[in-house]
Image (cartoon, rainbow, N blue to C red):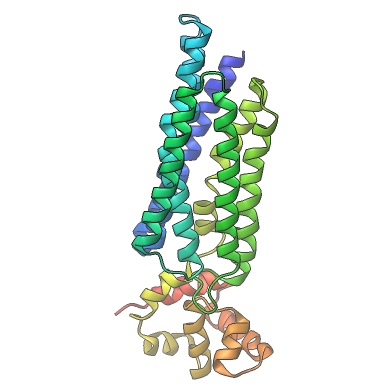
Length: 309
């Protein structure tokens, strides 16, 4: 019965991983941005670790345990997780790069080099300790490593997304307040079962579901919860505002506000940039929505993107 449950969860894991990668790929095709590429690579690396390091361990324990000695089986299990950790390191790198991009911070080669160097030195040390210190509980050691760094990097990513560079954030302030805490909360939900895990299979099931479902949050939200305004901004530079304003009877001031919406500015930021009151911005935005028959910034940007040269 339990084996059938694991088979079912495996198929669900495949579906969630495929869904996350497909959604990220769709965003990349639509916007052709380095930021979205980081999201796609994050999906690929995190789910590669999921199947290699997590499901690989489950498969070894399920199919090899009747045929090999417990001590040797334990070593196989530890090595399978250890070999999957490089994919996890690259996933954390992509998550950090994604957060920096969404918050308006630039990514450079020095950051990537330092990140990889520090993490792979740490991996080398961990591997050396596990191989040389046979008395150590390797799985507990790796579990602590995963919990500590997963929480650390998710907190860093959440912090950067929430406290973005003023006027340069790729996503709206409203979306930042949703994505940042949700990202860290999901990582906490993933780690909590590991705190209590000591071989219980039902806890392993909870962790696997939380891992595969949680990591599909970002592509799902960016597809259906919001739009990446800065990605649309590149298209907005090529639209014909003459045609757009003519079709929807958009005034000069309203067109200024539309451009700033496409640039990802919040109502408060638009107010400061155009030297008008916040209420005036809200009133203009409401009229724009009525004229263009949309209900949100996402829909408005999509309408604007239709008017290309």
